[in-house]
Length: 129
Image (cartoon, rainbow, N blue to C red; front, side, top):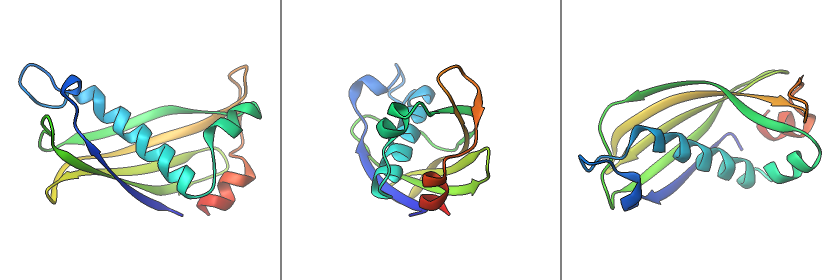
């Protein structure tokens, strides 16, 4: 599976004093989308971690167009943009009522327990290939 969509309800603790979702919370929404894409594809981050393979974010490019607000029902679309032997790039689009709020590209690498870069595991290459 190379694309997945999930709906989330914006919680009160995710908004700032202006009533908008604080920008940092979009990174959390991306993480939820990424985890659910992997799960829907048959993978599991916990299994990778148990095998000593950690997936870490090394780059985020995020564009905010419109704010989400408390109690909005948002859609988080997560798509595999690119997979190489050393990197996985996810593309995101967050919408509310069919209006684009945020787009982003997030680059991940796999490291071992000592922090050394590793090749993207064959299992992930197969899932996202």
